[in-house]
Length: 274
Image (tube, rainbow, N blue to C red; front, side):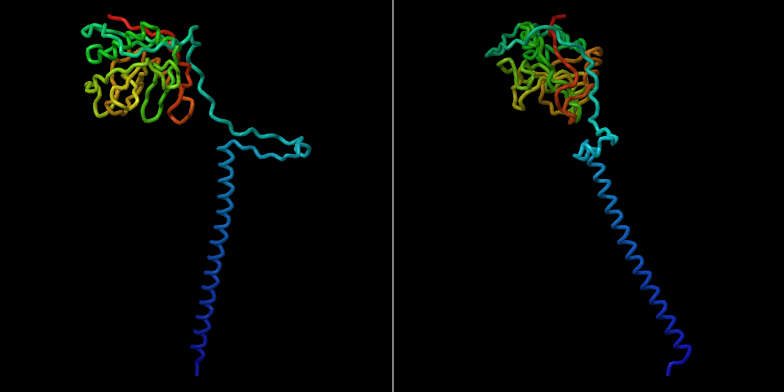
């Protein structure tokens, strides 16, 4: 026979169990409700972000019902930096090519400089005739023929490596003088730890040995590259100021590698013995 005290304890235990069940059920319902709210908010947030990033504007096709509605402007692309350069000088790019590398005519022991008169300012370069005689001799020859005059600097990189590439008469990255010159000066003391320091002027190539032509690049910030590109010149301080101005205007793709936003045209290139 169950005593009164035992019965009281049994009822109390059953009451406690019912309370626990109700609390567990309430917590489960609260979690489900919060998850549903979070899901809805997540959809709204994702939709809002998608609309913002794509610049999509939702509107009713019925113009009558929206005739008096206020129109919100769509998200617009970042504004392009102003062009810091002047208009190119009058003239046309020359298309002459040659079958063979020009005969050696420079004095390897002498000092040579190259001046690039560009629409963005003059870039003076001290050339390394002794260390890269074939390259300097080729530039002396091509500049004398007006090969670089009125050509665009067609490529600017702003991510990973930091260079302005020039010297292509087509402006597309696939032009040249018709001949190739050998790689030179790949053990230059300035090239340490696979780094081309700011102020370096070096030859572009196809990735194959001895495939340089007329295209070259100017380094405006230290750039990690394997020592496969002939370093043949050093940019003056004034030239670096011009180069950094070009770089600051950015490139056209927004991906870090494309045509410069600045209108960079070499009005005239000259090589002189100093």
